[in-house]
Image 1 (cartoon, rainbow, N blue to C red):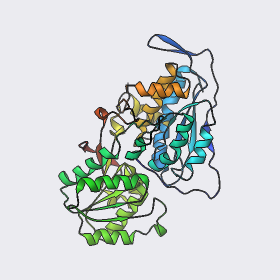
Image 2 (image 1 turned 90 degrees about the vertical axis):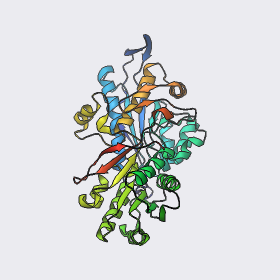
Image 3 (image 1 turned 135 degrees about the vertical axis):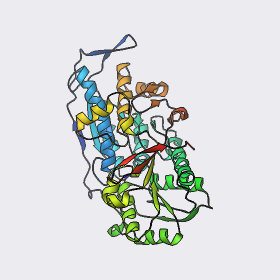
Image 4 (image 1 turned 180 degrees about the horizontal axis):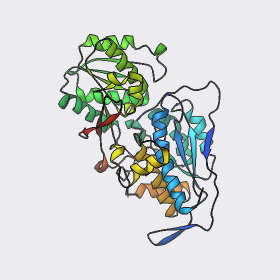
Length: 393
């Protein structure tokens, strides 16, 4: 998923937000497989991603999922045993490098949940790789992220090489659309996903293409030129590679011009913020793909625990982020208290969490055995609900 190009506040450095203290209970020991691993307290897991800006909804889903895992761990091992440290990148690739350089100076951080978005991953992961700090992204889906030789990179979901063809197959075989317009926001995520969809649909089906500015940056939020091209193409379906704010405004403006076709988008639009921007009536009947299972179907007590902790339902990738944090915690329990040891641990892990089972290939991709892609449909209440599992390719 997602590279949210959010609003940066000119020249102002983004501070890392610290949750809790790094208090340590040196006598606290845990046991994994019958072997004592020594103290697990005093270490930190970082969340690196958007907490503010136009992609904040998606980032908060992920951060809260990861933080829930730490809260539950501390309930068993001592208050503030493990610190969850937050770095608000706003999802912006321009902000990410400086923030990543700040993160890697903290020797207590043994792993990063994130970055969530593909553009900021391209910007920050080289810095994490140089420092040797392992990352598990719950949502960055650009295919090329695993091709750079980063030893610290782990992706807990399918990439766009699976999501794009699955969305295209759904458009052709379920929606029965034979004239499709494809647009994107020019972001690392949006353009990559749109290209994958175009390739899978084929030139006989794609009747037009266009690009917009990134979320929050379209001049005047005016998509009239884009909208006119969609209508003029005769398309009965629009696939948009981008995020929920743009997609919602495009859907709103298409509806205002009388277009009756179906909007389909990727996981960057799998958020109630889409309906907030479009209006519930316009959003209803739109579809989004996600290389994830519905968070509402997560295993164990996760759904109830998340609701109790945050007084809201788990959102897109909350459950995957919970699993990512728990993989780091499992590594700590096994005595992997340095980034190098944690990287080695992740290279051999096979972990069954609440969202999925995880095993990583040699380049950090999720093992193809465990890839999932779901389609969601927006209802009249403005919320995306599970529709069906989509083909993997």
